[in-house]
Image (spheres, each protein chain N blue to C red):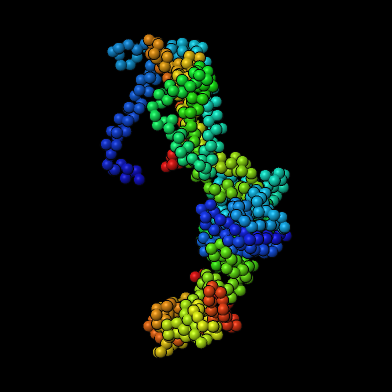
Length: 358
Length: 273
């Protein structure tokens, strides 16, 4: 039952780089919030500040109303899982989990009970006597998660915990972690640069760029209604076409479409799955490549000036390279000066898993 | 496998080099070892006329031998313990913290080994004379402490640097104070390499002669100092040989210990290999 509040937190490193720039976020009780962004966006620094491993240059952080801004990590009610799992290799699994409980002076039978319970929870019952180095990558990460969970932290912090695992294992573990998190109703802050992880696990996603928030929303909203061209381009696949609007018509290299905004430059955003193609000899674009994924096809096409656009089609065999096509977007958004200025009300279909992973 | 080995061409250059090296290292040891167990050995005989433990009995019957053994052990333990207490936290600071003058200070430990040692010792002896440290136990401790600094700083620094910082952070995260992290995580992680450093300084201190002689003589007599005076003042070779063989004991124990505690990579890692 814990609430994390971050208010106007900044981190400027001694060398002058601003890693986090007046960032604010409230994480509700039992909520899982993903910090998503490219490397260097400040998401890890932010998580490390919540964990107590970096001191904010300014700002305030509270857990359940208690100021933790300058509390050292050992006194914080947070539990962190590191990317490199950071298990202590000179202790076996049981001792790794028991270390924190021993520091809290928990009685030995109680330690045994709790460690065995949490090992059961992460699916490693009976692994207590194993050496850490004998475990597989996935098992090590589960032990690392168990090490944090056994102390029942108020806030669970996950720093790209699956980054070093292979794709298959990553997908399985993120489901398991999500299940455990929901079962324990533990407030969680999760850092990742993988959008598939964020979209599949988070209650809310914070898209970060250069230490600032680009957008905070539910995953489906971030995907369907990105507020900035950066978010549009970062989540899923998005065609971003830079062009000019004149008299309510957007045009770019022979392609034009109505766009009811004031005159000036604009970026047109169209998802591949919201772009219909029809074969036409006087087409606005030319097919460059067709890729058949089995469940669907992806057509790469070129506008007259060489701008690449992707479109998802259900019958890829209808298109050949060199063929002329016309573009008919079903849903579009337009951006100017980094802000959304227009969005068609038509709802785009749900994100296709293959595209989200791309 | 066996067949391939049998047919493989023998590397004669390698064998000759190995044989020469072994001879150069082992031959003096064999000669000294033989002398220690010799009662009579006169020119021109190649092997001694009479083997025996006569000189062992005579040497071990001497009070100054026993007092020098206990002096050497006490000195080595004291110096190693003090050195560990001073150098390990310092090494941790060098490995983990950044402070002004860090690199200069770090390389200054090399200075004691970069110049002819005896000249340095004479200069230090001059200072110790004014401080009334000449001929005292703690004077020798101090001078031998200086000799251990290089090993006890440089090797542990490399060992501490090799410890994953995330492991330390994870320990802070579950509630360990910085000191507890050092004690329960960093030290055990760096353990084998640090054991190697401690071993090196113990053995190095045990065999250290110039400092102990210049600062300690004549009141403080360590085993190597006694051996030198035996070799210089006694017409009988065997006294020196017996003490020399006695001095092998700590190296052998250290080597056996090293094989158990130190895995093969640790020494190399300690030197940045």
